[in-house]
Amino acid sequence: MNRFDLHHQALQKLRDDLPSLIDLLQVDDAVYADLQHHLDSQLLSLLDPALPLMVTICGGANSGKSTLFNSLLGARLSPSRGDAGSTRRILVAGHPSTIERVQVIDGLFAPLSNRPVIATDATDMLTPGPPLLTPHASVPEDQVLIDTPDFDTGLDDRYINRDVATEVLEASHVLIYIVTNATYNNLENTRFIRRMLTDAGLRPCILVYNCSRTFTDDQVAAHLYTTARNLYGDQKDEYVLGWYRTDVSDTVATGKALM
Image (cartoon, rainbow, N blue to C red; front, top):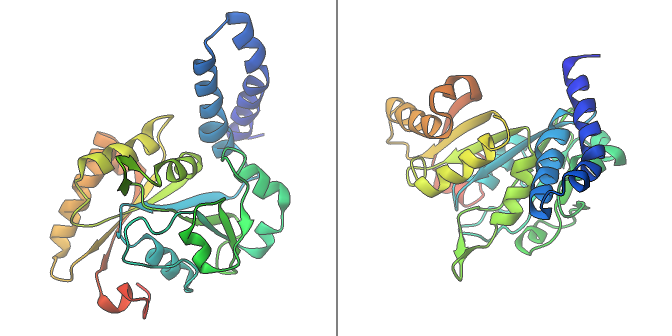
């Protein structure tokens, strides 16, 4: 048995014993709920060797998340629109053989509020609801790829998609964080993503810069270096798995071509 299996077993036992421990110690209910949440969403699911790797694309409004999701899969599965905050749900793409395994789906989405449902139409992404699941043969069987709503779009003094995005980002193994010239050094966005990546242990990310063709590679590298430093500090080289650029294009933005 490897060390991940041993750690998972130890955490599972702690999770099973937690209610009685909390009762014995008379710990406040809010503290118990916080401990339970961290164990379920950020530790147990991440160490379970039976579950596929959850790779989740995230970013601010109109950063190109859905376009990147579609481009990685080579298919237009997620709607790409210019309206900030228009995407309201999570979209999960998995290999058909992975999606057919009910226990895998149950395990992946146990930390989330809702179990996913099979997507029937791309416009389903535009209305609030449970996560959507779509089969796609290009996704490796040991992974799922996830598209998320904007986490920085506001309405009536609140973030309209923040809770939805937070749930899945906390449960994911790797984040693909796509930034633009307007967000690579944005303080609020950086605070949010840093909390997702570093709150309960450190998790890796991949950085993608969606920028003007006029930007030099040196400019892109400098901006992504800033993002990485803001997220991880001195540990950036260990936890940033890759740095990439993609150039803004009207053809791509209108859905006529992939990135």
